[in-house]
Image 1 (spheres, chains in turn red, purple):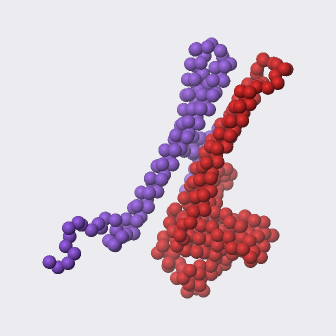
Image 2 (cartoon, rainbow over the protein chains, first blue to last red):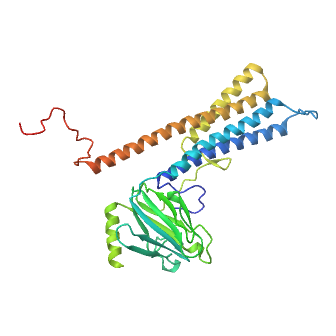
Image 3 (tube, rainbow over the protein chains, first blue to last red):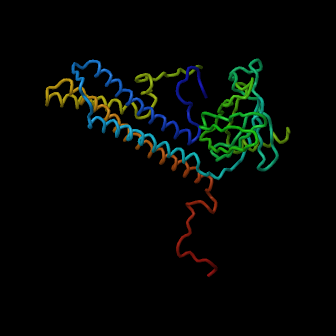
Length: 230
Length: 114
């Protein structure tokens, strides 16, 4: 999860997020090299003793600073497009969950086998237990089986919301009257936090998303308990 | 127990050299390539300024080349790792069933009572 003064991404918890992390490293290296080049050119320009007020053109430099940016863009575009299509692959999900945004909480519906649905409200700061995270914990987590391809259908009941979990590399707008689909696989068990990512009113910052990835048998136990409590 | 967070050193304030795979090696190779290229050019031409330019170009090319080579190998390793993980998982899931890849029918086995 996120930690104070964090600059980079959270650790990846899904294969797609791992790919995004690697692509980000690649793009950042390209950016670093370009920045170094510009810095060097600035220093060279400042320190040169050569002056010529009558240069009109130069074919060589024009070719270089046309071809080089094109090459750089291709170097960035190829892995980027690869990930773009990777994210759209059909993965035959084992489970479909509906995430519905409300003002100001999320509700989740597991309707593949039984009719299971529950609301997920943020735990207020004064009710947090020691060790829990402020503004991130929810009373009911979205529990999912680990290493299973999942489909999440995201929508909203009132205004725009956005269902986002950075560690899983997932963000999908919740639009009233529209079903948006996203999919992910959790690579490891754990608890992954996210926050609503589309301004939706006074408590927009206080409707977190908590995804708990557990082994399949624990997921079955949890869903049975939730059905009994319902 | 509080975990101590290691703050990575960031080159130019953006590149986390310690925590980004391949970046440290790429920068070190680039530095070596830069010194080598610049020095060789200076020894050949005795032109200081141009040697710095050549050295810098050597840094860029060596860093980029080392980076791309290392990342390519890393990507191949990750693909293999994922295939091995899936193979182990499938082995555990299908062991003892008809879909177990280890259960291959033997050739010449009689199909009925003799």
